[in-house]
Image (cartoon, rainbow, N blue to C red; front, side, top):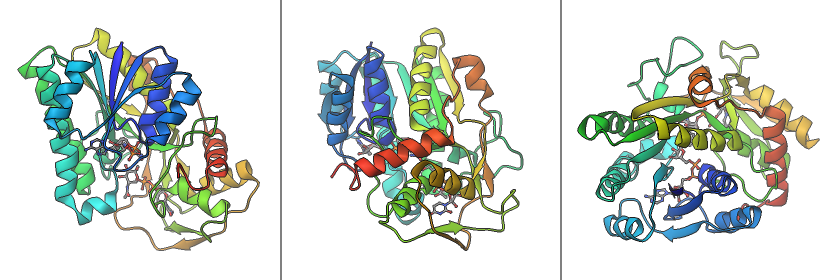
Length: 337
Ligand code: NAD
Ligand code: UD1
């Protein structure tokens, strides 16, 4: 089986490319490197002992897609390419809709033209927005995503729900990932944010190594056990495995299917700080700061649908995520640069 990974040089994409190569699949990566480096793919090749085919290009470029599908006989597409910063999406909503929504549309058109109908979409827990009840299951209503990034994901989800009615050959998985964390255990690939990280774990890692002075904990007065906000952090390797299981599941399913990829366990900001201190042996200085605009108190997954239908569950916990993130941080203090 030959799989096209759009955005395959990025954080989740590179770990998934590796998992696919290790599972004996052929991998083609399409990435414009707007938020990544081709070095991640060189490292993937080093670990796997063979390299993915790399095409540098944009998912919105019809010509690039046309020649890619003509040259490589692709059986399925895993679509990771997209922009993912909430703050940036508020400042540049049109750029987000162009890249994430238009990019998906052009890709789906090119797939149909090439008669490739197996599609796995990397969506996000952000589509659930604020929910009255936790954990969130796939049956919860969506449609109130709080920012342009979340809405761009919802628009693509809507497009994907409509497609099978137009052509029954479509087999589509929508995977709602919770908070990816950690790195490959080799320390060779991991998350390489541009500039100062906005996500919790890379920020904590840079505080622990001394690049940043302290962590600002956004909010100490949430209605949670310790007052700090709670999320469902999931090891990036578990996420990668979830994508492979979804790909397998599409062999026997038509239509559009939605699965949560989370652990089902909530972890507070202070739980994460303590776990990171234990894994690194370093102290992580922090101070309680005001809440961050747009944050909610608690968000974690009900992952039972994926467990039941994909035979998948997250196997790794906080000690693994923090240990692997710390190894990656130590071995690559400046990321891939
Ligand atoms: P990432 O930025 O590391 O990877 C995205 C990749 O897509 C990058 O390599 C980037 O260069 C590429 N890309 C972006 N626009 C492109 C375009 N128009 N054409 C070709 N390549 C393009 O991000 P990630 O964390 O690996 O996220 C991958 C996907 O998973 C995204 O769609 C993101 O929305 C989704 N997701 C991420 C998270 C998270 O916290 N990291 C959570 C849930 C869902
Ligand atoms: C954020 C995005 C979400 C996206 C997800 C994965 C927002 C509002 N949401 O989710 O859309 O899908 O990333 O990329 O940006 N925290 C601190 N101090 C920090 C950083 C974070 O206390 O310096 C806290 C946050 O308040 C939050 C938790 O840590 O409660 C996790 O934050 P983060 O890693 O940014 O993820 P989310 O906010 O869950």
